[in-house]
Every structure is written in C-alpha cells, then in structure tokens.
Amino acid sequence: LVLLAVLALVVYLFRHPLMRLAASALVAEDPGPRPTTALLFSGDRRLDVAGVAFKDGQIKQVLLLKPPPNRLERLGVVTTRYDKAHQELLKRGVPAERIAALPGLYRDAWEVGDQVQAWLEQHPGEELLIYCERFASRKLSMILDRTLGGDRHRVRLAALPHREYDETNWWQSKLGALEFLYNSLTLAHVGLVGRPASPPTEPDAAAYEEALK
Amino acid sequence: VTTRPTSRRRLKWRWRLLILGVLVLATAYLSRLWWLPRAGALLHDADPVEAVDAVYVLGGDPPTRPLLAAKLIRTGQAKLVLLPRQKLTAAERDGLYPAEHDLTQRILVARGVPAEQIVIIGEECFGTDDEAATLARYLEAHPDLKVAVITNDFHTNRAWRIFRNAFGERLSQVRFFGAPTDNFGPDDWWHTERGFVIYTTEFIKLGRQMLR
Image 1: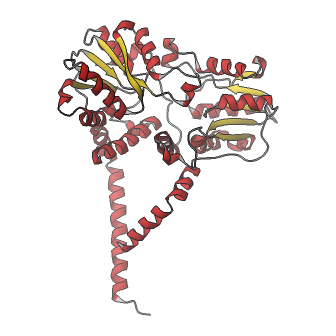
Image 2: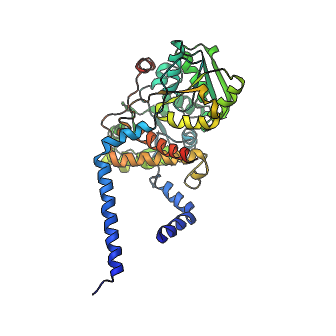
Image 3: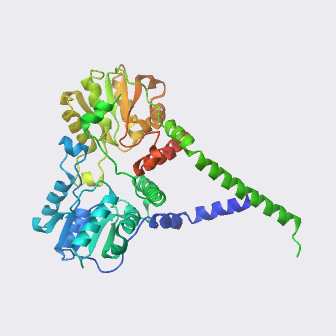
C-alpha cells in the first residue's frame, strides 16, 4: 500500500511530463531532407501547409487521395474529398498541372500503403513526403513499415500538429483529450491485430434505411 | 545462506499474485467470445421505435443518424426534425466542410424530408451534455411534445443518463432510438479498428458518466 501511495504521488507530481511522453509515443516523424512530391493524407491545415511549401519551392508536386465516394458524397450532399482538396489547392496558388491523384483503389490506410508502394515502384529513385495528422502518425508509420517493406526509407512523414492542441497541452481541451484517446486505441489495435481481413464498406443511404428495423 | 521468514512470505505472496494475474488474463482471453458481446450490449439501451411528435438528431455521425430520422418522417412516425446547432470545428471554420447541422439538414432534404419540417435549435453544442441542455430548454416552451432522441445504438445508454440529468422527471417526454453503425455492432465490435475504438471509448465515457 505504501508503495502504491508513493507511486500515485510520483505520477501526480510528474503528470505533465508523463502526459507529454504518452502523446509523443503517438507521433512519428522521419528526419532528413524532405522529398519534393507530397501526398496529403490527413492533418489539420494540410492544404495551407502544402500551399506555403509549394510557394516556397519546397515541394513541386502534390498528390491527393481519391478514395471511392463515401455515402454522403454518393448522396450528392457534399463535394467529393478529392474535388474539394483540388479546389482549395488551386486557391492557395498550386497550379492544376502540379496536382494529381494517388492512383488506385483504396478504402483504408492499409490500401493507401499498397498504392504508395505501387507509386514508388512506378517512380524509381523518387521519394515521397506524406503530410499526416500528428497523433495518428505513429499508426501510419507502423502501417507503412508493414506495407512498404524495403522501400519504407523512401517515404518521409511530416506530422502536422492540430491548431488547438499538441503533445504539450492535449489534456487541457476536450478535443485534445478525445483525440489522444482515439489515437492511442487505434495504435493499440493496429499493433495487436494488424491488417484487417477486409476493409470497411458503406452501403448507399437507401440500402441503409432499408435495413433499419 | 539463509532467507528470513518474512522475506520468504513476501516472495510467496508475490508469486501467488503473479499466478493469479496470469490466470485472470488467461480466463478473460479464453472466454472473450462470451463476455465481449455482453459488454457491448451494456452500451445499448434504445427504446423500440414508436410514433412521436418530433425526432432530435444528435451530432456525431452524419452518415447514419439522419437516415433513421428521414425514414421516421417519411413513414409518418414523426412530424418534425429538431437539430442542435453544433459548435464549428477548425476545418468547418475554414470553410472546408459545412457545419454539421447544415450537413444533416442537407442529408434529410436529400432523403425526402421537407425543409419546413426541420428546425435548428440552440447554440454551439459540443457534446451530448450541451445537446441535452438545448433540448430541455426547447421543451420548456413545448411541454406537450413527445420527442425521440436519435443517436447511434452504442451511445443510447450514456445518452439516456445524460438526458436524465438534464430532464429529471420530464424524461418521460423523451424516447431514445438507436441508429446502427456500419460494419460493426455489439456482437462483433472488437473485430474492426473503428468498432474497437468507438466501443472502448464509449465504455470509458459511460464509466465516467456513472461516477458523476
């Protein structure tokens, strides 16, 4: 009991460094010079970051994800994620000829990893920068480790912080705490279970309603 | 070399604790197909669907919750859709995505709900507590309205507890209908990444809610 009490006291006294340490375990960034082709995978303000990097000459080409339309895109109530990102990049000064879609079919991060591998094979000698959400970067890195194998060193992750929280203060906001929790659990699932047998599916709105009891 | 009796006793207890821990973990693992679905079912506490005056669609999962509302309106089981006004996320403030209440309204209209039957209420909700308080205020002015709260099925137990705190005895005015999630449910939530994350998070949130 004394040991537990001392442990609890130590944890309480060092709670801020411990929480910073816990969040930094979710973050993976690849050091080294950054490639000039960037894939926008996820992350707050990734379009702004890519626009500025293009203007500064740090990147020459932007790849966007073009996944199959989701339920709401099929319903026509929102612009497809690809079209929206394309429009926003144009607004930020990236010319259309420097924007392309990552080719192939992908429904989850594992299948994106497969298509990144295909892109690397089609572009020998080139490297790829991937912008991703900071707290989800360790998970993505783990997935790329498993899908890219020996080509993993040709991909560098840039882990973008959220404007409202990062490793140093995530516990101070509800959003930060929730994102820390979600990403910790996601990382645990990827680490323990690995690649799912099949990616998720999403029937049309009409089929969903039809199945409701 | 001799070991003092107290040290031997401590060592013995540590071994016993270690063996007990291993046994508990092994039992939990071997019986997982028995207890995981039962644990998942604890989160579900939806009422059977019945006719109500209005449905109140909580924010959080636009691809599913508004579709149940739309079906209830089209089949005449509800006459009005109430939507809590949501606090804008950073990306919504940047204009990259529509506000969630606007998106839900578009989905409802696309699925055949007349725009005049949709009312956005309250201001800047962020979470179920805010949404419960918003509906409680609205129903003070509409005391005869029978309302069904629409949320995902895994969220119905916690939602009921939060609304009970906000409504007290007036909770009899409110029902809880559960919209199923795609790809996972109480019987297989641990199979998919999203199911695992959502159910585990919900267990934590429910525990926190019960301790309040």
